[in-house]
Image (cartoon, rainbow, N blue to C red; front, side, top):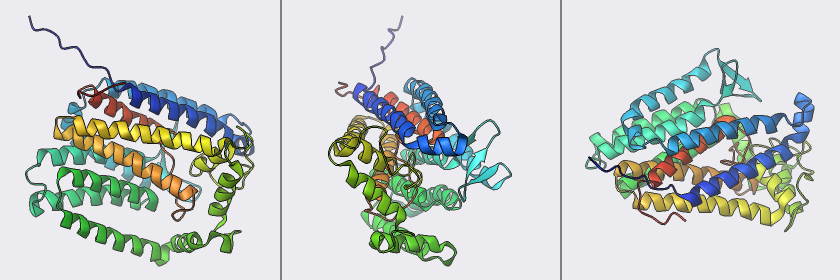
Length: 372
């Protein structure tokens, strides 16, 4: 009788860092969304309740994927990718709804969701599976490079059609990271970066989207027009600056009272800095770095190429999106709407990121490493 192989424990440090970030996120969403909840829904607990529900569903998803053999995702990758792209097309049907001037949500009646979050995870799984099957043809133009560019173009194009340049850049950089780790030529990387730069310049200078150029010029000197185009950046800097070392205290933010737009989402890190100070903001950064570091260790130690590329994609997505969010809040790059993973308000985003960590935890169970 064959002896049953005992499953290894998952990476506890990775799990703990994730749960702490989600917990901090719930507290900060409650604090930062109270004024808007009172104004819009006449319920200060409105956003808190929705975030707690999302976190609960996210925890269920995390536990499920932690026990779901990640290698099965390779066989399901085409179906997952097809469904994720299909969800993006729903935006352009009667199910697609406009919220705050952007058509990025799908209304199913009982709930709404953002297809862009599904496309991000779906394209990462598919590209990792695609490249792992063609490890000897990665540098071949016809068999490797062009098909990969088509996958990246389709995934990013679906998000760009939703007029979401920030998420398009995030996903594009993530998928290129997977391609780079798979063994692409450095010259191909340079050509892709040049092409991406040209595309970005065109997107910013496009006459149809003049607001992007206004955001760019405001970034150069936000205080030159602090009552209009520079408003978001200036108010964010005021929040961070007033927090000092220890912060004003939990719940005592002034900027959340309709000075900063989306304080519970795109600018939640500014509220963290204001209420919890430099030490609170540093704690969030350190937890993100801890999560990223554990993910990198898993990628370096996993034996199969699919697991390595899948881990690379998930870790790259979390890293790039966190960097962009913090850079926007600190006025290090032009303003764009990017939530902070695990922390910002948003049900679809939270559930998908916790699912992604669940996949990482499952991969860690197949890796020989220190799990403390």
